[in-house]
Length: 280
Image (cartoon, rainbow, N blue to C red):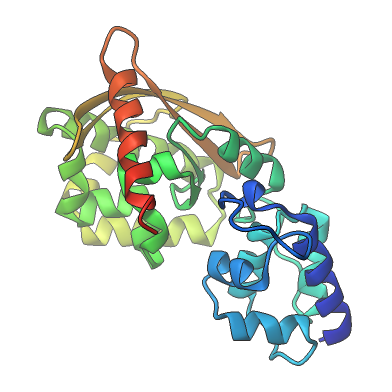
C-alpha cells in the first residue's frame, strides 16, 4: 500500500469537486476548494477520523468496499478507480458484466434528473445508486444490505416490497422480474454469480420457482409501473431503461405517464422531500 500516493490522490480529487456535483447544498462560504473531508466521509459511510487518516498517509489499508464507495463519491473514471485500487494493493475490479462501479457519466445524469426519479441497477437488479426523487418515490435502497439490495429478491421474499404497488399489478410485475432474469441467465450461462442468485431465489420462493418453470423470457426496456405512495397516492409512471455499452448496468428513469396526474404528484413529492430536508 502506497500511503503517500493514496493521500495525495484522494486530496486532489476531493478538491476538484463542488458540493453541487455530489448533491450537497453549497452551505457557508468555504475557505478551501472542493469538498470538505467530513463531507466525503459522510457520503461514503465512514467516519471523518478514518478518512482524515487516509489523507494524512497514516490510515489502515482500506477494504475493496471502502474503495468502491470512494470511487463513486469522488466521481472517478474507470482508469482512476483502478489506480485507486492499485495504490492500496488490491487488484483492479472486473470491468465486465460484474462491474458495480458507477461511472461519473451516469452519476452526472442522475444529478441532472433532479426532478425525475432515477436509479442505476446491475443486470441482476441490484440497486447501485439512486437520486433523491427515486428515494422519495421508492424508498431508500442504499440502506439495504446483501441480497435485499436486489429488486427480485425483495419482491419474492419480503411481502412489504409489494405494498408499494397495487395488488392487481403484482402478477404482471412478478412475471416481468422472472422473465428478465431468464434472459440474463441465458446470456451469462457460465457465470457462477448468476447461477447462485437464481438458485437462492428458487430455493426461497415457491412463487419464483413456479414462474421460473414456465420459461417466459422478456428483456425489460420500457415498462409501466404504478406506485402507491403513502403521502401523494397512486403515481402512474413509464419506466424507461437505458443500458450501458457492455450491458452491465441499467439506468432506470421513471417518467409521468401521459394522460394521468403523475406529473402533479411528482411535483408534490419533490416539495415534500424539500420540506423534510429544510430543518436539517
